Picture 1 (tube, rainbow, N blue to C red):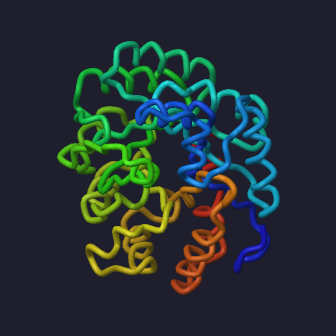
Picture 2: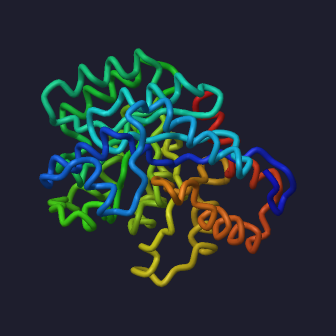
Length: 300
């Protein structure tokens, strides 16, 4: 892809895969059909076959010159959708599956997902109201650690799910479970696992940087508009600079938080982030790491 540093391979570490099951799950929570969810949100209803949605995403990424992307299933129990996407285009995608470790059968599903080659488990402690030190979480991490080149995505900080607001669905999240500090001892306990904190910690930048400083296996994902910056009066360039000072370029993963069609891939996030990096004056080598190489190496 053409960037301010020349033509380099760009990969997106954070793309939500809104499958038909995702629409059906949200609809069931509010007494709607998948078609009604699509109508209420203004989003395209995805095809029933997730492999078809994968090809749509592949075409969207290719139109921008994006090399690869991490697809995140966005409701628990939807591992099959991202697995089908990766099976359809293994050259294009990595697969992350959302898991609620407190649900019955969660460990069994994690075992199957990792055996089937899914790359990362996505944990949302505040959404599902648990601590990273919960024995059920530890069991999932132990399973992940049994497989090489796997990662653990842990959402920390402020958690708002826009689609739930659009559908007037309750969001009984618990921010007491969202502090990155909760990840510190766990990341040390599993030094062979890579942990990814998205959105620079989504409002817990200071705590995220502390954990990254103390745990060399903790990575930061830069995705979304990072609207949490208004809490601290920061701009994106300052956030990037602080993250570079602590974690270095090798542990930053560029992401957009893209999710639905017809919007598709969110070029505006790419544009704002590359502008911030350019204003910082980072080298082409560091830009190459952040914008793609780090993600590729995470699962190499």
